[in-house]
Amino acid sequence: MKLFVMVVINSGSIPFKLIAKQSNQETIKAMQELESGNGIKVGGVKALFKELDVEM
Image 1 (tube, rainbow, N blue to C red):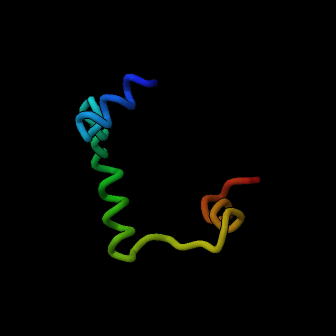
Image 2 (cartoon, rainbow, N blue to C red; image 1 turned 90 degrees about the horizontal axis):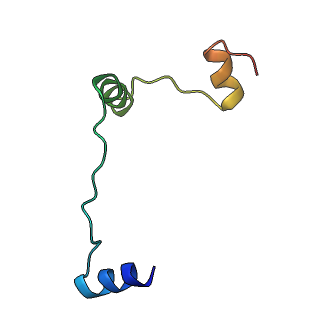
Image 3 (cartoon, one colour; image 1 turned 135 degrees about the horizontal axis):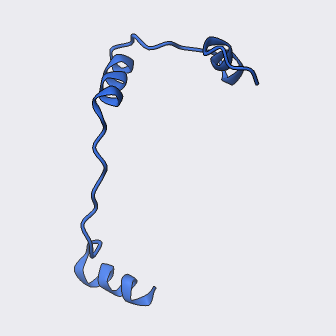
């Protein structure tokens, strides 16, 4: 732990490359749908489960 802290302090950055996973096409489409205001809105978890026809 000390070595990691020293490297961050000395270099001013994290000593390894941060890589984020890329979203698949279905996830990108869903995010675009929500950003455009076309997503389904519910009032809470119970309403979400009812909308999805899932029993709690």
